[in-house]
Length: 466
Picture (tube, rainbow, N blue to C red):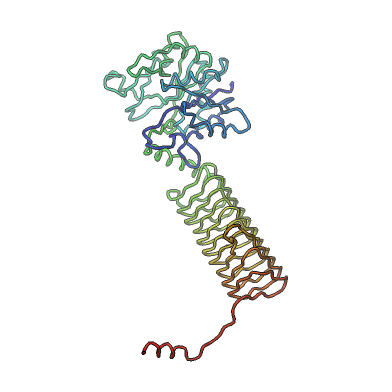
């Protein structure tokens, strides 16, 4: 089967979204809506993907990023909103006459590569000029009805949006147009040149190409799919929520089939590009986003958020928030920890309750147990920092780094005023403010001596009586 060119119609304004953001750039499970049909086209083996956008070129930055170093994703521009057939005409320079062309709307993100591949295969099997994806619905209200001829081929599509558009007999038809088509490239281009705006809107509609092909005794076939969600479109935010629920369910099913336990899928959010290895458990009220990668045998949540995070194997992270950081094998985080960008927790390390880590390297088996802020620091292997340890990394103008060696014994309520260095095997007295280097193996104490004032309470009471 020849690899198809896939044309994605994405020039609509999406005004019903009531948003300054173009409809197809709204996020859906970690990807813009337009990214979903592009991914499906690539999964179907498309030789080229042509995204037809509007004259504002709002989709151009995304299309450029999606194409990357290659050229398999191209932006074509429909200068005026003159209907779906006109939108395909905007892509005609990229349609090969000798290859099939698949046309899909950009707002149907639940379409899959398998479904597009099956449509292309059915198109080839029927040796058809055009093949449309159809569905049989219990309630076909609002959809265009598929009218077939005595030979079972598609004669035309009857719209039903306004009273009188269809006859009572046509309204009884339950097979509807799914809005996805496969064409022989040359036949598509020839038919589009003949489509006329014979409608109240004065627009050129792609389904009007089908009777033109039929009139030339060319085969117009239908490929029926069992899952109506494949062609579920997005017009407003209610539709977006419905589509998101289905997409999220598919993501959960994929992970659970691969050996991941999702304790309560209904309270769990996982983006499309997240990777999770087998035997990891995801507890309720957990959100996992972006390009997060999670190793095997981890325990995530409950009430944990991960954004663009890399976790090794055997990591536990309950009740915590982490973004753009790395936690390696066997480390534990939380509860109530905050890992900020460029935090690195090495093997077997521990970050405990109410701890914040930012742009810091926490060594293997090192511990930052609780109530601490470690920013712009390097903490050596085996070091144990006491409760309420603070790195004072900002002097009002610049950030400075703190370097703490291996197997350091930190005291509680300690502040390190950067830039400062602590040697291996050093000790720090509780309540210290460390401003100078502590040599290896030394004890650093930086606090005022205690002084007791005898009879102080009696003095206070006497002053109160005066």
